[in-house]
Image (cartoon, rainbow, N blue to C red):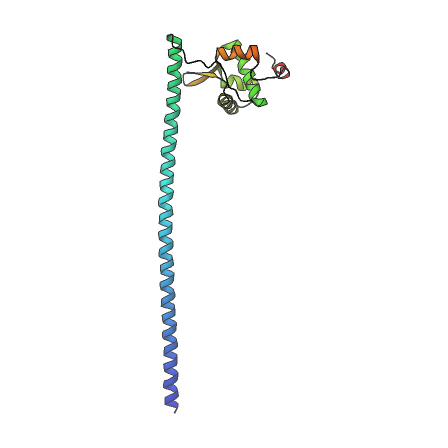
Length: 189
């Protein structure tokens, strides 16, 4: 009888051990599958990251080329205007969006400095306004976007600015930018 119970317990013990081994093998398979899927996912993310970085590099390259082309076109336009009878189509009706106070200030400084110097650099405006050169560059870009015709000339890769003479004449006569006289008084030239 002891032998029967002993065989019975051995069989039960073996079945438990087999079940445990089967469970651990199954768990290992599942973990390996999860690990493989994670590695595939990580590989896909890395490939996408590399592709995004490459695309960003290409876009930056294109932006640089566009900027250079814009500068060259501006230079060609200025060359044609100064060396021939080439005149860009004039827009008689200037459609100007309202300028902020700082934009008006930068405009007035450009207006006044131009009277003294002719073409004015961003640095000249920055010195007079107390703004940084990069901030002046941003304000000038914003003023241009709002419709104020500012002419850029590049000398030794440095930008110089001047107001369109027709616009300047119109601004003097009609104050189309609606700059109040109090702000004009702030500029001591």
